Image: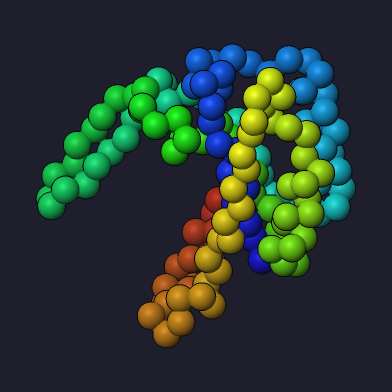
Amino acid sequence: MRFMILIKANKDSEAGVMPDEKLLTEMGKYNEELVKAGVMLAGEGLHPSSKGVRVKFSGGKQIVTDGPFPETKELLAGFWLWQCKSMEEAIAWVKRCPNPMPNTEAEIEIRQVFEAEDFGAEFTPELREQEERLRAQMAAKQ
């Protein structure tokens, strides 16, 4: 099972406050543990929403809105993509995480990623083949 681990933004992350050396060191050690355990597939921090845009689809139109976006609690500061045996394992790993926002409360959300078999018969053999081909192409570029 794959899980997307979402680190919620706060006022500091939205203001562009960078982590200090202590937090970077703690997160580096934590990421090393995740990699050694075969859990971490990817992980990155995100720039504040002031450097982002949203694209809204309405009918046949796309509307682009520049950041920043007002609802901090709905924004993300970073993410990991993990491979775990269960939601319980993902929760256990998150509980070991250093507080990503050490000067305030922090919230991390865990969401399971859909796998091909989750889509049922609608995900035809042709679509599965296309998905596998695209994944192979992406892996080759890394």
